[in-house]
Length: 373
Ligand code: ADP
Ligand code: MG
Image (cartoon, rainbow, N blue to C red):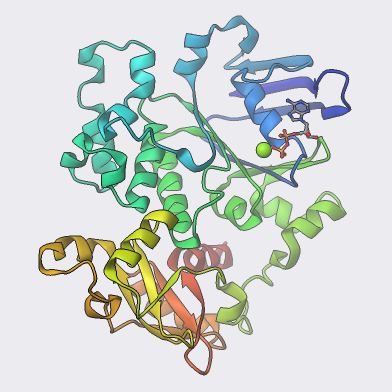
């Protein structure tokens, strides 16, 4: 349990950054902290592990005042993941995963098998442990970043906009993964985001910050049904009270518009570079008019790399049997194909077959769950 008692933060003589607040976070909860930029989210979270010291008030973990804990004790209790979970490029994946257990000087015996167990949990092969990050795809690197936070088996994990800069598909997959791991491994996660959809999807309870004030701390459903003030109401927008999912809702209402695509005339080398830069494992392929033509997959390219020339065009390696949905389709009609298939997302096209977005499987799943509650 984490307790804040009349905690306040001022930076020097500056205006107050976080006004005095009380807050209790129960064990095994997924807590999201949301608010506009500069509202005090990072400050609130960093005070928990004393990366920032409060100006006033007391923070307790399991009844113990954190100012009485030394750095090692804090590290043992609390994991911290910064934005974009960057891996250290010169270290192997194993060494990256084991950073904190090493800092804590765990014995060889205690460290044995941790990296192996964790990498299997995210469905990556054991031999990746000896590779350097650059030899993994972007999506694979992100998964390692997430399990690294779990290696020292702390009960509390702080995450400050860890998926902020990711493309929607990778982000979606990692959200599902972190939520699954949190429930399975019984962690308390305090997760900063500025994305309300992310908060609704992940959180048991949400902390809403506005100009340094903690304006609401409640379960997701309570926030949706009883927003504390106009600011919260604006944040939740049209998601209010089941209007989020109804018969009139179309794919266009649900889709993500920002989507990575590559032109069909580009080379395989271009595709690999773009996937690596954007940290994605697949790209949709479009022609000059941005009409959807297919998709390329890094795993397929890797498996066939010996048969391919770097200058070969994307056309030669792409999958052409891409399913897609029309932006005007009703959401109710695409739920079944999406949930029953193995793909994690479907491209969305307009009436002329132009690629206009994607719908992800997990956004649909959470929609259906909300509907059933
Ligand atoms: P958020 O994470 O919600 O964007 P922060 O917690 O980073 O907000 O910042 C809250 C407020 O405190 C902002 O007004 C910011 O400018 C101020 N602030 C943050 N860090 C410092 C600092 N080191 N010195 C002075 N002011 C700071
Ligand atoms: Mg911040």
